[in-house]
Image 1 (cartoon, rainbow, N blue to C red):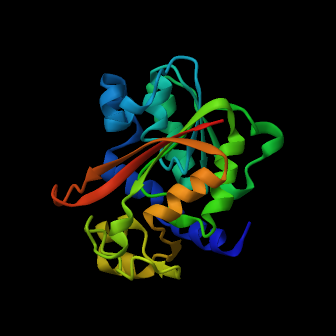
Image 2 (tube, one colour):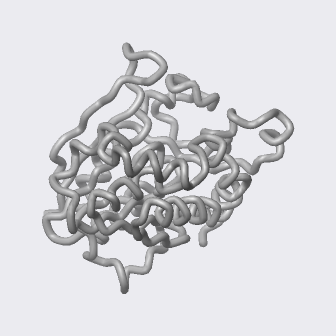
Length: 251
């Protein structure tokens, strides 16, 4: 595991299970909501799937299973790839409570077992701020391409690159030049929800934030055919871009 992944793993295994219980309820409570309205729990992302039943989905940095469990309820075969064992615990307990099976691979996404998973998935899906955890976006996109079957689809939703220059989403992270290529150290997005004493003790993450052109060009260079790039308003101010969703297919 590369050095910055080790650093990020420490951050994402610090009180993560307790955070999800506080934020989303117990696994039983979360599972109840997932079962009642799985499409609703997927939010806008549901519209980017052509089908759910029987498809294989790689949920990249799938965290606590907040999207994997609804997908499984809808009939998808989901594998989460995530670096945190605490996330795995919450996700698997939620899946069990919801009466579905998911697979959770605790690993660095850059070290996914390609002997097992190369060309395995119909859809690669990620959301909620993933790309900035990886310092070489070309390597990352090459792996996403490799995971997919021919004609498979990547659904990549992330924080809008404009968040580099302004704290648009109120994540309490520092801003920088839009064109900066610096590696920075910063808090996890949910650190702001903890009391100050815990927040100060939390390990930091290592980030590389990208521009729109860096993201799109990495997708194209890896062999994908870009199908759409949708921008979404920030939850803090609907006049500003806060997130985007990119859809590409494997040629």
